[in-house]
Structures are given as C-alpha cells and as structure tokens.
Length: 68
Image (cartoon, rainbow, N blue to C red; front, side, top):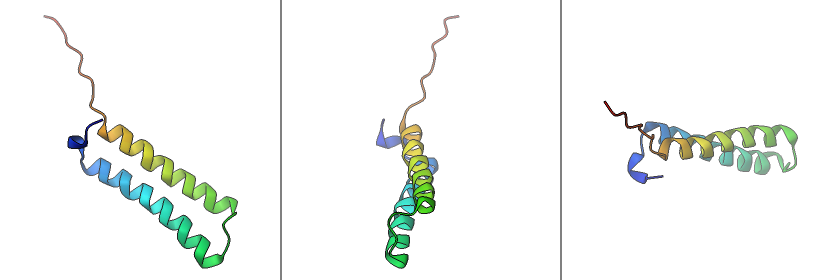
C-alpha cells in the first residue's frame, strides 16, 4: 500500500467511508435512535465499500514478467 497511488478512486472510496459515518451520526442525533437496523445496514454498506475501496485503490497491481 502506497499513498503515492492516491487517485480519484481513492477519493471516491474515502468520501463513501465518510458519508457512512456522517449519516449514522446525523441520524442518531436527529432522531435520537442509535439502535436502528435500517441505519446500521446503510452505514455498514457505505463504510465497508469505503474501506475496501481505499485498500484496493492504494495497492499496486502486480505485473507478471514474461520471458520471451
């Protein structure tokens, strides 16, 4: 994993991760409900897509060497 690989995919994944956290905090403070299965579902999906997107976008693709 290398921060020099930061690109638009990493930015999109980071925004997805942040959106998941912010939606959960907003919902909890707005409605006073911190144990709602619906908001858990949305938060988990957004946070996991964000985390896995960041990990996948920062890893370097392995190039296979072919001998001619």
